[in-house]
Image 1 (cartoon, rainbow, N blue to C red):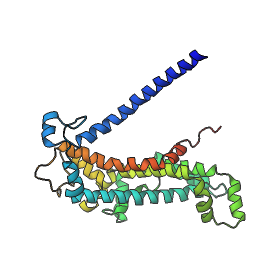
Image 2: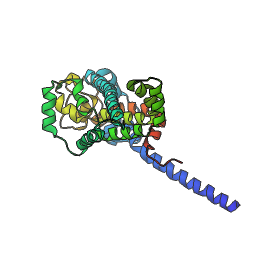
Image 3: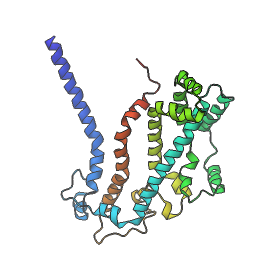
Image 4: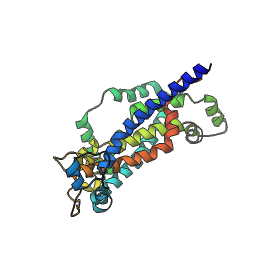
Length: 292
């Protein structure tokens, strides 16, 4: 018995060690990028483009990002507005459509659901979508960044299936109490659906935060370009798109340091938000799992 206990402790130490090694390997790229963003021009010339730890910390790159560049600050505001407004509209339209098509007594529920599923397999392509956005006068507006992707078919199906698994007795009790369909959705369905709402909301938010393709197509006004376009321009040394108005200091940081600082600048907000919705996210990814 004692030997078995020691063996179990030994294996636990092995598992903990493996997990620590994996954690460090996941954190190492982030640490390298953070360290690179804190090096000066002289250190970059002496040590190269990427370092594990800076010998002398320099905040010149962050000084440019936070205080010397109107373009970057404005792009960050556009990105934040897009994530906030886009995620809200995505959840609003996805939730209402999923709730409606989750009603088993709704006429033509199956064909309507198939139409949404059909868009996951086939679509009109980029040119018809561009012509549609142009016809609706959405180009060079913030709406062009999220209106073409208001409802994701896969997320809709996940939310619809979740709504269908809510006990019908709760819905019937609300109907007996005189609640309208909208009232049932707000007071009964949504409080029970926080895991799936948080999960899909996080997916939508991360998509809007990282997406740059639609902005590169529909946005030509520098005042409306999001952070992803600026990051793309910095990472691509051949084209410094959207960077014409940056006022560099007398001793500017190396390009690698500025790019690393911009990566940190654009990544930290998602890392800060995630812990607050982690418990809902964990519950959400277990949707459909076997319950004991």
